[in-house]
Image (cartoon, rainbow, N blue to C red; front, side, top):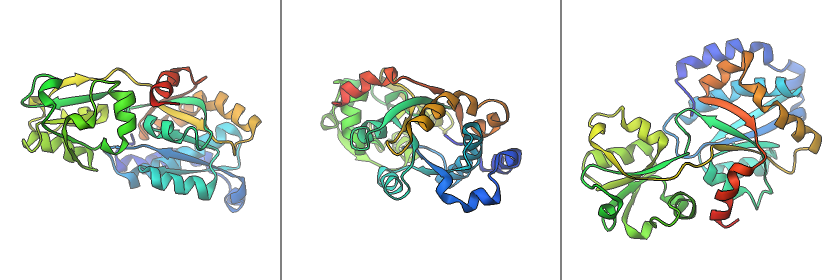
Length: 277
């Protein structure tokens, strides 16, 4: 999610018409806070924040708000801090974070965010030396997803494996995981669709093949918090599809968002059940 830094200035310029007035900026209480939590991304978080800032003007305009304040995070702890301090009305969340936050924060699904590269919609166990999942078990498995074992084991793997089946080598950096397999520092790796796309661009990446592929998962989820008034949330849901059209398309393209659309929550029910919700 979120594209090259060089595109940001052009996007911001094209969105000047959507920028809140100085008076709206002064009235911070009128700004609607929105959290974007994209875990395990391969891009720059600081660059991503710029795209979120630009996108907020479009969202505010579509909904008739005085302004909107977006916050991009890659870690749940930081996201929780923003939730506590800024009381956001809405969020765009990675699936694992949504499942973790759903009950304690009383989240309601209002939409879906389709992201370039999939955004965690499919996972793979890959290897240079093994030909199937059984061959990876008992060996070194590199991954940046071990921190969310419940999500991986219950939802992604759906019984096919647990982390206890491997000697896990965890890394917080998505590309570093790929390089461990490329350099034979790990026999296998558990990666997501964004990492698979990155693998194809790395030297020697063609030698690393999937030995197991998960089922397709639903895209990033758009949710409302209880802090959002019911009438505001209803309007926000109906306006989601408008955000990435017209003048807003450039902002969505720059942010790596293919589309936003309303959802009744049905696509997420299987994952919620598997997770234990």
